[in-house]
Image (tube, rainbow, N blue to C red; front, top):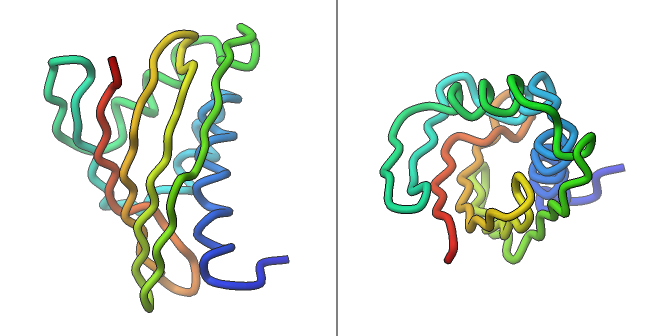
Length: 124
């Protein structure tokens, strides 16, 4: 049971973490707003656009769960004000060796929280 808006936001980001690890694109699509953007750096390469390339990458490869990757996602901050929220997520072990810092912005639409933007960077 969701007790607070912060819990509801945490639940969406946890679904993102679980969907990423399990390779479940349908769960990931549920987390994102249909007009979401996803921008950031993969090493030195700037990527600008929407989450579709991420969905394709996750869906076209064996899941990290199947491969036993040491993937973990840890929420380090959540801030909710009214119908908007900001979340910082630290991911380690993505595809076995990659670490990310993700900054999510969520918005509440029709009583449901959705990721509206994700900005990310890989960590050295």
